[in-house]
Length: 231
Image (cartoon, rainbow, N blue to C red; front, side, top):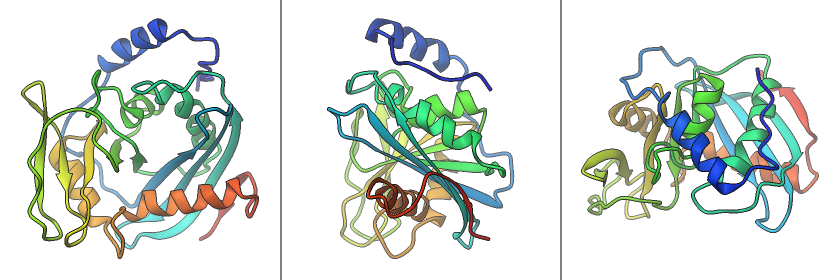
């Protein structure tokens, strides 16, 4: 797979890359069975060049961890809202390449097509990796919506430019919603169905929650870079 490096890229060139990659996104119902699902997370300080990336593999639907990949990488593309994929994707691609077993589907901590140019990190990564991806974000980036009912499982459409680009999902009773959008090789209904099946005891779906915990441990030096088999 081609090495991904955006270090010397200008924002105008990054916009052109987003526009080109957008043409390759496939929004379609999920066509493949899911036996192994992955969660991804990234940790960085906006003023630092060091990025910590993690991908955790889980059996589905049991959501039992079976392995993880961790990468620390220096990235020089600046922190620019709407272009975070250019900081995050190079490290995620390195973590992806390190996996001996590729998952059937990835849930990414971030947006898919619920992005001003339809190119959130889940879409950007999904196209480059040629993998089905879903974005699950804690905050809205673009679009309008009505708050879902307070009961767990309630949801409402996220509308941007007269198109449903995602769903606003209440994962637990009376907690803040999360924002689900297809990244690549998925549609809104399929993404919502998968994320709903990934809800455990917490607001954040298990794949990205566990990936976040993993990356924090890595950043603190409690676990090492590389791939580890947990099966």
